[in-house]
Length: 199
Image (cartoon, rainbow, N blue to C red; front, side):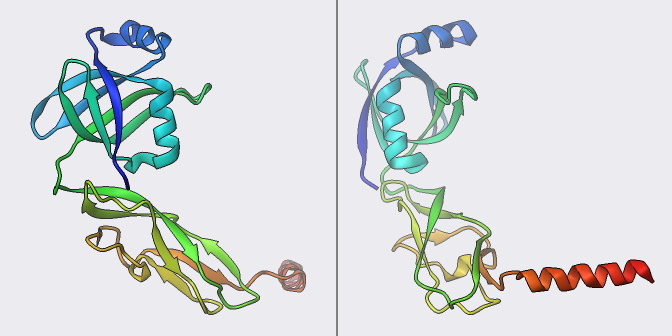
């Protein structure tokens, strides 16, 4: 995933009142932390940050340019959202370095055609990988070509990008191709249940 730049301002007001004033000014309260350094409180431009997250997701690598002249390389670690407005209220940013590996959750993209007549059920749509902080994959591919009825695909079947390591249990089922229930099957089961009750 490509690196993007975003500006930030040092934040001196804290608490709920300070956070509200920051948000009213069109900015998001945020904290930069990691590597044993003292947490740094900043304010990010709300619209710009929201658009970056919308395009790149939580694995978007960011160079944060702070107006006091300092610069930090970071990844979004946690977002707090307003449950009604669905706006971002607060951001935790994890400091990273070039060459450093981090654990991140990555979406799974399914491709290929399974055996006809089955119902493809998604059990999990993301996995955790360990990868270089500056080369995080946007997604991982799960090929289901020819998947037979009653069979499944696990995390161990994923095509991992070079340099990535699977942290998720490789036996975790991601998708399964099940036999669809038919009306006749449902009727047979209902009939069997009725007969059992009559006995």
